[in-house]
Length: 365
Ligand code: MRU
Image 1 (spheres, rainbow, N blue to C red):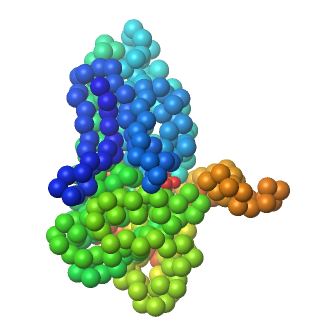
Image 2: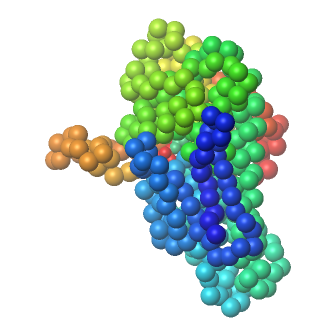
Image 3: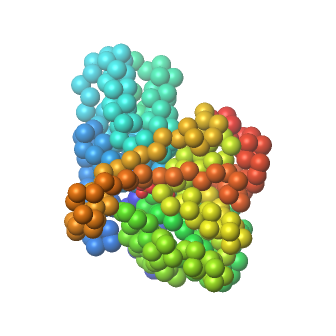
């Protein structure tokens, strides 16, 4: 059996994500699109090995905050199906060890810790004694994370689509689409919904240096969905805004602090500054699983630093002298003052965010 996240299929000229899994059928494997190969090749990887699943997340085979969370949960469930533990205690001990290990794969997206924590908590709360029952419950929780995320995306899409009018042009950064979630994405969800309602929306996708998630992934999935997409280099956004060619910016987020400060792919902060200068509304789209009410502001968000070779040897080519120093933070934090609104599954949250988040019940996490 295969536990799938983000599997693409063509249906009536439309792209949709398909998620399958037959609960109760054990053992199984996590299956993912290998996003490092897109757009050249659409290939899948499969595993039930915890070290391999850790490496899928670390190497960005699967990436994007909600997809990381779901992949970790399903990966944990897949790996734990093989457990030989003969008591509740030894099963729980192995589960915590594996969850802690997967949690060390990437530091910024809070969805990873949220999803793993949710799986461990579900089993802690269960009074099941037998490892077989615990295995089933774990699988059930992992699938509910996946199914719930699909619904969250849909609702983010519906709420965000209220900001879009026929003929609008949206700029986005990185990939916060179907490839980054279990559904139709976060930042791209409003665009998919508007498109399905017959609105013509034009999208500019920042290529998103250094790993080109915008050019490789956002452009790929929007193009497959028949949406008008144009790739630009990251340093062209100001030029386009200056020409009045961008109506709206929408990006995703990896972690949102209680005051609305939002971590997202490096370069998002610069976009927000540009948007403010040019009076272009700047929105973040994210589900509750991305909101971290345990931190007051963005200074507490850990920012992942990745290998310098991602910049100095871009896609196998020497793109900076091998002797120079490289600094490669993968995310930045956009201060809440620069964010026009946060599009969530429960509605559009407007500043002041602390009050807004409370009103939507998101403080309960
Ligand atoms: O390093 P990545 O590709 O995992 O970064 C992804 C992003 O920054 C996304 O915008 C964010 O995770 C939101 S995905 C719905």
